[in-house]
Amino acid sequence: MQLTGQRIMFDLRMAIYRHLQRLDLRYYDRNPVGRLMTRVTSDVDVLNDLFTSGVVTIFGDVFTLAGIMAMMLWMNWRLALVAFSVLPLIFFVTQWFRRNVRDSYRAVRGLIARINAFLQENITGMSTVQLFRRERAELRAVRRRSTASTATPTSTRSSTTRCSTRRSRWSARSPRR
Image (cartoon, rainbow, N blue to C red):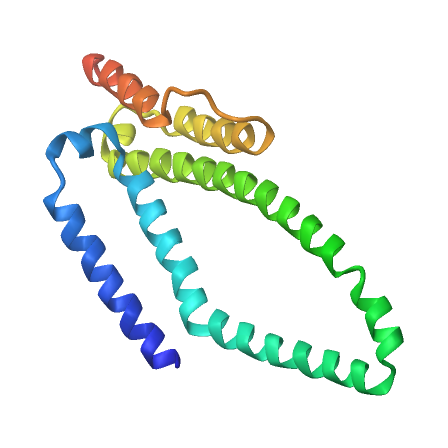
């Protein structure tokens, strides 16, 4: 089962790579590479967990639960029906929780993607940062972004846009001596 899951993941990675190669250049101008890398790797990792271990775990849990329910019915069917009467409530609470967790998970993934995009751009441009002796300022910016993204939602303007603007201003200045 895990070998099949790994083959599916390989095919999925290849399909994603082919798709990324066919995208227009404007797409890469609008979306920073760090954000794309975060989205691609985190999505593929989640699917990998699902295919390699999630399916096996789900089947095992379903069979265990069915066995427990059968034993409860066999031992005392009246008491089992009373215990089963809370299942609809559990179902509705689970659905409510799933919807709320999905929104939170998307928000967290968006924040992680912004931080990774910011870091990727800064690491790629590290020679420029060092050339203009901006290591401390960039460290403060990384610290500020990391704490701001954990405390409050970020603004709609992307972090790489701000960073690119800042870097273009740096390149216009002469290096400090």
